[in-house]
Length: 452
Image 1 (tube, helix red, strand yellow):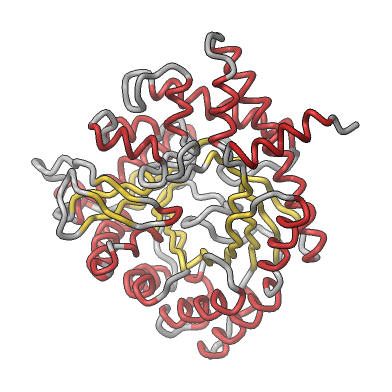
Image 2 (spheres, rainbow, N blue to C red; image 1 turned 30 degrees about the horizontal axis):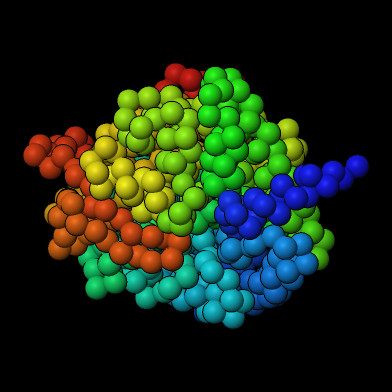
């Protein structure tokens, strides 16, 4: 039976506490679009995306209007383009242009999947696509790219790590006139998942159906508001509050996903319950941690508080839906979180602390602006460190850093919108990891990979 108090509580969450559906993402397989003629392959890609997702935006808007639930983004994820390009040939940038054309026609915010999976080595088409990323992201507006360079089962492909340091640096340079925006659309993963609805890392995994609807829910403000009502509770009580709140948020996501699936005649996939913050006041993961008792995010105790938050969010979500997936937990993107921005600007939150926090949160070093002088090998070393955390802990980790060309630590990089503004964080540039990175090869998988 529907309780009127629950209805009023949900209305208040939406109107006062920034509760929203962050994204409805349609995953689309492009495996059947491969063709010996690359131009025909691109035409097939455009046609299939438009056929499958032509009504995605209007359907999302209709559901939002009918239920009064804000749906912020409507997005598409596709099969890693390196696979299609390997079968069809030609310059991979052609496929980026086809995806952009489809994004323009369907009206979606982003299409993710200009991607390659190289955790154990480079297959046909992989290296060509990776080397094309800077150009592809510089000439498109709505295309996102990701590369998976490691996994718990495979280890870390250090040849790919070395290459990705160069690619991140080159992407920043080629989009320097636009505040290095290309790097905000590029993620380097370890243990990437196939059903992630969040950008910039979304792609449609080969184990997924031909098409599918995933929903990403967010509500840092709701969790913070719930904790405010328990100023003196112990940590067990706080965990219970977070679980109950995550349950309610996930149920809303399940409702929207099921409705979108029915209207679009596409299978429902998963609800990703990730506390994805925004620069808006009252929509910050850092402020949740501070509500738990930390004077500021980044001080000692931050990692423990984040671990508890992440665990409680997942437990509440699993109770609410049988199909919780994606990443699910707490994101800590610096430029997209008002509390993280403030802590980084004050010097209380440093890159080393963020790295420690990534061992217990949903993803990794996300939307972090670094000095423009940061070399490719240092970027590669940052990627390697983060991949090692993911590999050893059997979790997804990622790096999305933005070398701010022409700027130094302490300055600010402005993106606007959900991407926010990034305080440029200090990076240790006094000693070089170049010899380590240049060794290349593969870091073997850890012992815990042997589970069969």
